[in-house]
Image (tube, rainbow, N blue to C red):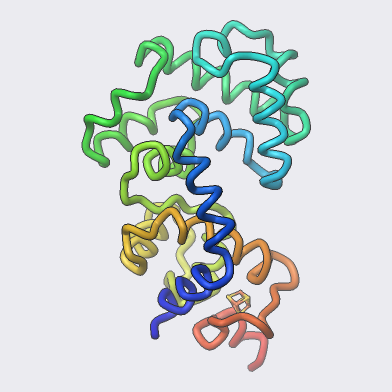
Length: 223
Ligand code: SF4
């Protein structure tokens, strides 16, 4: 079994039930909601991301026009549970302004584009990262792309999944080749869980890790 096979097996055996529910929920959101949710998720927990998103949804209608017109203070107040509310509000408003002015307020036109064309168009939205674009492509448009978040980047950097390079596009291409493209939603969310619970940034639980034999970080510890 390869390192990727072991991780996929672990994810399916341990996280499938939970991550499948999250994948369904994310896939049911329209692309703009998902964009806002992904901006809110920056440097916070899933629980606080959902709380901030729900607060925002109860405060204003989530569409480009409304979010541009809503005073920043109102948005900041609604999303403050997720932290960094000033920066996140600026990002949400700038993205919505761009979408309103350039795409008539909707991202639905993406469904008729090739994945590479869609990526390059979405990356023009101000303040939107590669990860956010790939989350939208994966969950809203069912494209075979693997968003790389901080947890996935850490696992790949520590193990032989990457060659120690940290740049987003390199890691994404490497990871996409390792897993079945039809499993990307489950694997993406499952790797995040693995990074949160086992391959943590501080004090990773290497003793119970199923891929320690493939891990540069672990082998440097036991040398
Ligand atoms: S052995 Fe430790 S550092 Fe390496 S992947 Fe597993 S948990 Fe992460």
